[in-house]
Length: 251
Ligand SMILES: O=C[C@H](O)COP(=O)(O)O
Image (cartoon, rainbow, N blue to C red):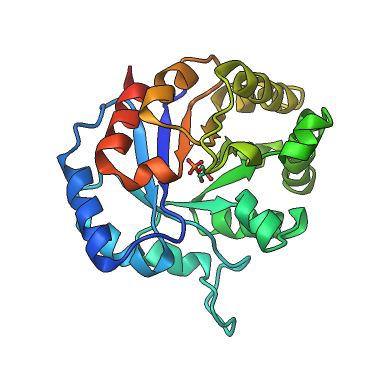
C-alpha cells in the first residue's frame, strides 16, 4: 500500500508577509493522518517556512538545486548539503518549467537527481509532455524517455528512494486538468516501465499527478489506481484549498 503524498509547489510566488499568512493557514488545516504533505517554497522563503512549520506535520522541500552536494564556488546555486542544513527533505528535479524555459536537459536532471540522493534527500522527478507531443500521440514515448534517462544512468534501484510526478505541460497553470483516465493511462505506463525491471520497486513507487489540480478535481484523480497524490501549483497558494486537496488524498 503506497502512502499518498500531496505536495504544494509555490514556484516563484510569495513575499515574507504572504508566506507568513500561508504558514498560518496551513497550521489551521486538519490534515489526514495517513498521508504525507509537503510544500516547496522559493529558496528565499525556505528558512521562514521550516521555522513556521516546525512541528513537522508538513515537510519542506526545495524547487531546485545544484548538481553538487558540497558547498563551493557556484554563484547563485544551492548545494544539496545546504538544503539538508536548511531543513529540506525533498527536492523537485526536472520540473517542466526548468526543462522548457531554462533548457535543462535529461543529463542535467540526472546530475541533480544524484546530488539530491547523495545528500540523503528525496528527489521528486517531474515528467511530462507538451500539447504538441500529446497531439502527435507521443506522450508515452516522451514521458518514458525522460524516465529512462534516470533509470539508464542510475539503475532502477535509484527509484526506491524517489517520487515521480507526471505533469502534462498543457495542464500546468492552464485550468485544463487531464481527465482521471488520461492521467491514469500515463501513470500505469510509468509503473509498467519500472515493473519490467523490478516489480517491487514499481509497486512501491509513488507517482503524483500535477496540472491544475483543484479541490474539486482531486478526489477523482486520487481515486485512480496508479495516482498516489498530487503536485499542486496554483491551488497550493491558498491554504484552505490546499488543505481540501490533502483531505481528498486521505479519503
Ligand atoms: O508543480 C506544479 C505543477 O506545475 C502544477 O501547477 P498548477 O497546479 O498551477 O497547474
